[in-house]
Length: 358
Picture (cartoon, rainbow, N blue to C red):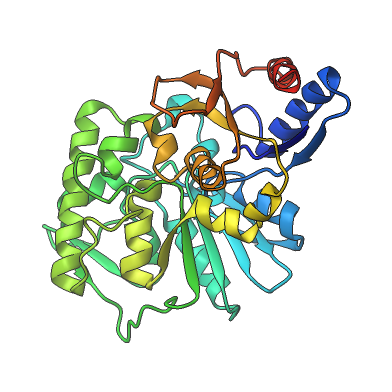
């Protein structure tokens, strides 16, 4: 039996590589003759850099910057063998940088990410990948844009600082002299979701609560992002409201698209391509994918949905391992193994044993 392990991370519990290792141990315990291939994946969120380095090789360099609350941080930048640079937005504005009881997207900013990205682009590399996901921000990327010289003016004619809570007061965008979308053709944003910037499935409505926003704050952030989209249309002539992936990382996708000329791409699809996922399917009897929670979002740009889609096109059997199943519909023939506590390795090893006995 040949089994390909291709999970995403189990956020807050295991990395994708750790998930593979624990599943493999369980499979081989119950079926020592099984051939198990470990092929961890990511979608542009936390863990993207580690996955790309594991598959493609390369090294890292470190850049200094500031976090979502302005605190000093250092972030790793991947330097792939072909010269491509990789930066995770979560390393500079991620939820993991703020204790759970202190998270508040009204006061966080992407400015530090913008400053680091400006430095990286100055290195002159042919291609830069930015992973979007796991952010603590819903600032629509205005913090990032400020690091590139954009000024955001409030109704009182004063310049705004670039946090999510200031979006509601935004009145005008001042474009830096000589602005020419400096990253066009070089910067690709790996979006971990397909959500647009605004609307019922926009960045605020979909993600602000999990970043610490109350219901009232979520409404203010949604209103502010709508205002930002209108002003980008008015002052830059670019429509970002419904761009797929524009809502990624609290609206960072839309900002990269509008202010820097970045190309937004589905992160899971891009990473699967870079890591030659489909080439691993030859002769495979079962593909095992998974993530912490299986829900509707799993089929909107996440690893699980893209793995199922790729395997379905090639008639390869799929099993999904998850800690929580929200009852979302899966394609016929896809097996869901759920009910784990997802707090220790034993849960995953026991699931691996079940898989090995099939």
